[in-house]
Image (cartoon, rainbow, N blue to C red; front, side, top):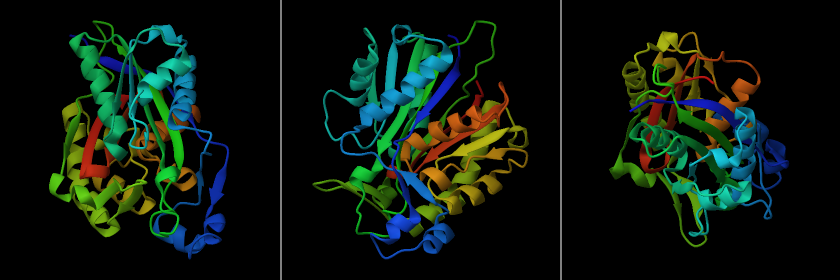
Length: 315
């Protein structure tokens, strides 16, 4: 059994940008109200002719190009999403078809906001078990399609987008580039974040989620570092689920990653659910804010009150 590593990243966002002032014309809110409570200033919103698999395919194509690979080089496609309205073909199969892949295994994972880190761990496990040699792992969500645009507490949060990572097997003499996952959930509190109804709409119990995230998650994130054999001080970057700046900043501080770059993509992208971690990471790498080989903590949390995290080495 050999480990795996992330070799390339890519991200994609729709062209349309929705500002806080735009939202103020739609619901009873203001730029000051939104920025003071969640830190978001803008978000990208997909149109009706931009389905989830299109967002995902754009991000996946960019990741493959960055890796110098062709679609035929991939034998596993994993798409983390909670906004796939149609059940079959699944998003992974649709993405594979869009990219012209000949015969990959295709699976969707719905773990909402921690979907990407669950999918990344699944790809790592598949490589370690020998059932895959190279995987395309994508987080993609179209949250604007399930937003309740009459609820000012939730509609101001959401945005659309996708992020992708290419994962492949390490050489036999190479240290693994994806550390052990630590994952779990709080099932009895799963109702705190919901996408329910016909049509499905996003709703949450904001204060419950805030208290859980800021008090219970920092020690779990430190255990993720411990499993990877690094200290929080050794982290070059921390990429948490981009839920809310008022969650990201205190959680990052409590983890103790005093030397790390903290991803704050939520300010310009909003909460993009499963897309948030790979998109934020891809942007940090694209801007050259993390050196290749540096330790990066990825930690997703949210819907189902699920969480999953691992330390990776930056491609």
